[in-house]
Image (cartoon, rainbow, N blue to C red; front, top):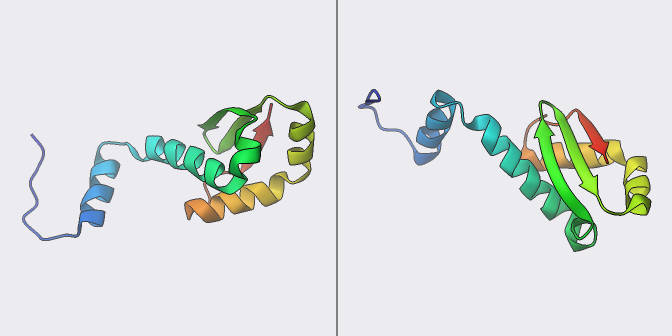
Length: 98
């Protein structure tokens, strides 16, 4: 049984502490990264995206179009900056397009 805190705290603080105590933050980061990719890249790129996986600080993105993969590889640093800004923290340090 978990320890009960008697002090009042906001829902945000309670959820944050729950995620931290149960080591769920990494999983939440993976889900938020997928959502941020879909939101930032739009329907055109999402149509050709087959898989998105966050391992450590590296984001692996599988694309079904080699032409799109080449285009996106030219702007990796900008995509990385946009994703980190959307996530609100420096989570992604490298992007691998495959």
